Length: 468
Image (cartoon, rainbow, N blue to C red; front, side, top):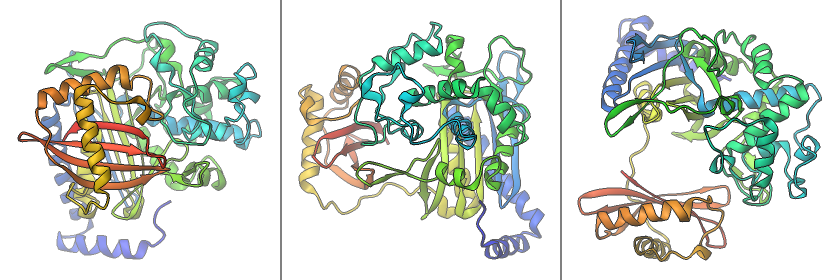
């Protein structure tokens, strides 16, 4: 919902408007600054095309396309150009599930074996809620799928059943596309029709999302954008994948900027579902330990400048996007891009900072290091990574590809970068039961970000190195 304290916000808008010659002039000036930033960022990132929407205090400040929806035909992006949703579609899958809950067909605390009776016995503790909140422990089927092969719902289930559980249900949070694939199959079963049909009649239509729909390679779809990636500085068309992958509920939708702005109004009004359902959707998940993790049902539930930030990003088949709601500032930002090598949050974060400088992402700066022994351990771990001597016993809950793929990559990278400088702690946070440390570290003149997560028993659950 919008901030109930509207009087203070209205006074602030009025004062800015008076300084600029009135409310209309204030919005015009803000829009011009946003547009200048978007064009500059588009050029910096080499983005073929994008659509940007900004809603401030219930008023659409900007809804516009930039660049090309199709480079081959030089078709410009408009507000009604259709982009792929990627994982932003997960919030709509959650809506489809909650519609079944409200209809009495599904109970969130049900074991998913009620709906998938052929699932392994080890799946009995996994509930529908666990799938919605990425706490099920179900392994990633995309590690083993052939993206050019057709699969049925039954195929997806059997592949998921064969993946080892990563952890007991509810123990941890771990982002799972598989969980949302299964949720779509569940809705297909209990609703007696495709989850996309459920969304079309019970979400898109009442929310006035007039062009939102499922992905289809067969249909002639007006205003569909082409997806791209940049390979060695050259723009390429997206890679073809089996149409069966674009029936999955982990993010296989088309929507336009107009559609997402209509959705923003529906979210604002808590439309379609009851208030209790919305409260569950937008509440952080509680882990078995009692600790919370900032994810609801298809929404990241974070903070910026001490105020709630509800958002999700997505990326698939040559498209990336972000939808952000800065609740304390009554500000929503939508960025849809047709290049999977772009960074949509760079656009949304920059726009947010223009609207309110307090929303700028704080720069990484040194903070007091109260755990020098931990820093020494992580320094030694970097050298072990460089030398290929990491001990798997020091790690827990890592994805299956970490040691066979990530470790050799980092080993080669570190050997190329040269000697490691001192680690400078810039952030320490707690996410669920994990302590997450972020350091800046120099290799010669280059500065890199080094992030490590550990659980209470001291084992490492994540390790990453990225150029700052």
